[in-house]
Image (cartoon, rainbow, N blue to C red):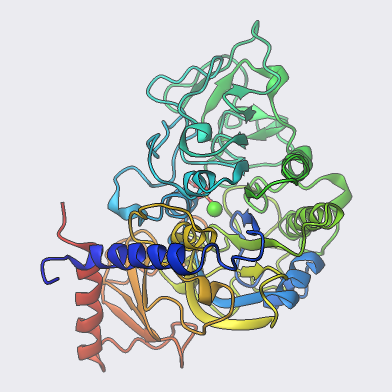
Length: 508
Ligand code: NG6
Ligand code: CA
């Protein structure tokens, strides 16, 4: 086996595990029906932003209830400290930094996951699951020269999703419309949409020229097209009847999520429910305004918790709660000022969005990727617990495939960690590459951040971890990454550096 590069060993192991699962254990419990899988993916929700991870300034009873009845992970990760790469890894099981063009995408980017590729959805679909995506996509849509007024192809329907109701990119990027299947919702053909991330299109006023038209002002970026009194990144013209109302967005997405469950109650289903909450612009429905003392950033956490509650209610009403595997997690760590003046900094009080961890969204430090991570499945998880196993979204594809007995060759960097995910083993991954604006590496208690030369903080004031000197931390004694051991433990430093380079492979 000496000819196998380390990158391919997990693939071989996976295959073996998948075959073993097929032969001996098909599916997880042959006598039991396979579980439905509902993956609730928050946006920018920090480790410390929910009650069961220590928050007191916002109440999250629905998420806390799932944690109390399931497994709550303390070392659960997205692959990356921003959205597009984390979602790319979640869907494909491949580290995003292996592929060019997986950074934060503009709203008119073409789709970065090729049709025909194995995805978490295509694997489950091939195993007989009905698959759906609702919410934030941010993996690009269409090919070059996408026409928003016609059929959008490729889209999630081309990579394994039977149903798709999404926004193209983010709440703060044009086009500010929903896309149902291949079509923009509510579009009047007489008022076609045009979108640009270059030269502005149309002649509607822009935020930077007309701040008096804004109900929420920007603090950085976000100074172009004004939609619903909020200026965004990029410009759009037309499509007036199709434009979303931010205040209603959580209701719209949650309704689609619960309808998907109701419609598919009679068969196994996989729902990827990627909320816009708690990303900017933070615009809760009026019924959540004032839910916390923290202003919009706190109130949209309460709104997110409500969305989780609606999903649980629907599962219960349909008698599906027991045999549905529900996961609640987030695409990257928290950020306070992400470009709008929404009082998040001023009203934060003593709330700690990152919990005990350093950094946040965009950062190489732990809070960049370490996020809330809860797994709930009453039929299988009999002993609710808190688990310190190292787990990551990149393993969902391989793990779900094995769990449901899907016949698939699992590509990429994903590993099967069903036992850890269900709390049946205390051991998860041995190691994990964490992505900020560069790559950091975790192995056992150790964390290695190569020396950088970039800025220390970006406009959001998030600590990026770009110190020129390499950093090494022992997270078992120093979870807050305060004491750099690089100089006192050069052996470990070089071992970590070498291990990261081996996984990275030769640079292309
Ligand atoms: C940044 C945006 C930020 C957010 C982020 C993507 C500016 C100044 N900042 O470029 O507001 O949209 O991209 O966030 O434009 S993510 O969660 O989708 O990765
Ligand atoms: Ca995000």
